[in-house]
Length: 216
Image (cartoon, rainbow, N blue to C red; front, side, top):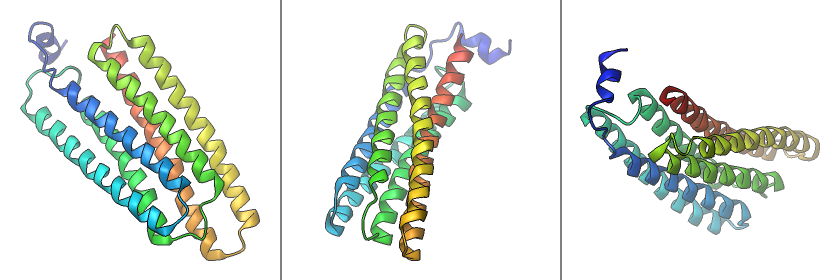
């Protein structure tokens, strides 16, 4: 056992991270909720309005990430391994960044219409975000909430599998039905980033699983 792990048995842990984790998870859910609204919108004006709101959320996420990293540098004893705190925070930030990326591209590319699979993917991204929030809420007492956290992680894994299937079906239909090459390229790129959002959400839960294993 190294000295850091030994000291953790005797030195009070810094619990200032948990409010930051909770704030980060709530911010992710807000971004995912706005993505659902974006995919249900039909006008360029509505897209631009929601895009601005998502950008604001993304900036808040950047601030939370920075606060967490500053706290990490100041803290002697952390609630779990430093690299896991860094990774967890970075992965949540990645998801919000990708949601912002989808939103920006819809506004930049201005596709003639948002294909139906977008709305389905946005729903999955939102569902995974709410499960991540459940996990984060349980971290405050990870030992007591282990089963609850693992169930939520499993749900995210299942969501990721559904998103993979949706992505391939969406790409297939796109190449089969879309005759305009420009629209094909636009929609294919947007679909790729939507699929990446769910992959990144699974990355969050993979880190959470690793934290639970190390705390066992």
